[in-house]
Length: 100
Image (cartoon, rainbow, N blue to C red):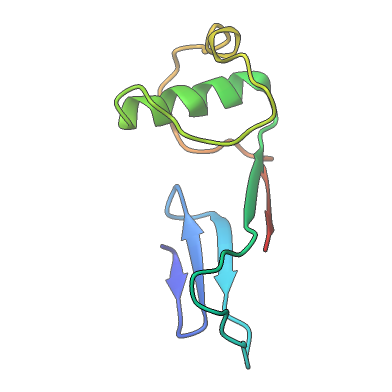
């Protein structure tokens, strides 16, 4: 977490660059109990090698298992692009998108 107030939080992966900001709007109407909301978070990396490096990094932290919903993804083909460079966070020019 890079910054936090009563109404928002800025999340970071490298301690410097804001990756995601979550904000609580004023005068929010609470949802009814036992209902779900729609939430979407997308990361668009500059190169396929960057995606391979990120998926490899996440799988190392999750005992080889990464759970995500994606368009069909050929993971073995993707990981064949992994360049075996150390994970140093998301690369410059990574784009993130959030929808609620």
